[in-house]
Length: 284
Image (cartoon, rainbow, N blue to C red; front, side, top):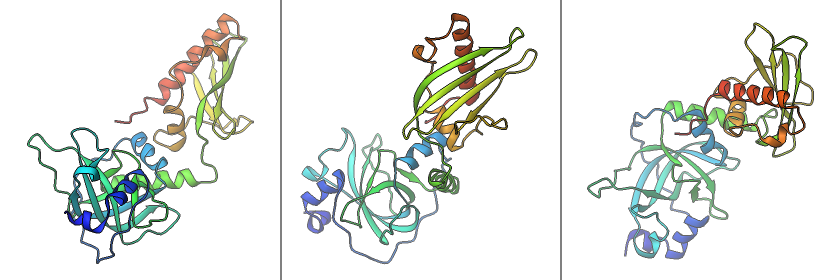
């Protein structure tokens, strides 16, 4: 019987995977190995990790043990399920303290020779959720939620977590409500406003202004009143992420159905301009 089987029943292993587990013993933290040189993922990829993970831990992997039989049930086909124990270096995000030693389940893909990469002493960032009633265990929030620690990834994760908790954090955009276009008195002049829907009902609107002989300008407002000083969001910020990763690829027909065909065409073109200015939501 494996060490983990002696120390932790099969039922406890299943509970860790589904959101519960048993706390490991407390020991002296193991020294972390030097970080592996890996570039930080794009902003949107990190934001996805941070925003779905109420707990983020900077940790050094101490031990890994391959799970077999019923203990490994539920692992994706071709993957190996490991039980990992890690020594906490720092709590990056979380409302409650975590113990110096934590345990979690990790699914890894062997290489072409069937070998598993050695993880012991690897410094990692763990994007997770707590396991109710078992503070020594965490549950990773996705298959990509263990990342090699780098200064850039650590810094970006902390910044996104801070921005998400700020009092003026932008709301989660869920779609487009309606839009309208007002043509100007000169050819090529006009203004389009697009009103967005949000999870908590807070107002968000986008305005696009066109003047003859000038490049179009656009801005986003987070209140009922459009501030004349409003501007497009800076790239790789939380507001940029809320827009670039949530807005649909096209202006919905329902948003323009009350416009004339000319005004609707102008609104569609202006919306397309906004998406082009935002750029793609790169999650790779």
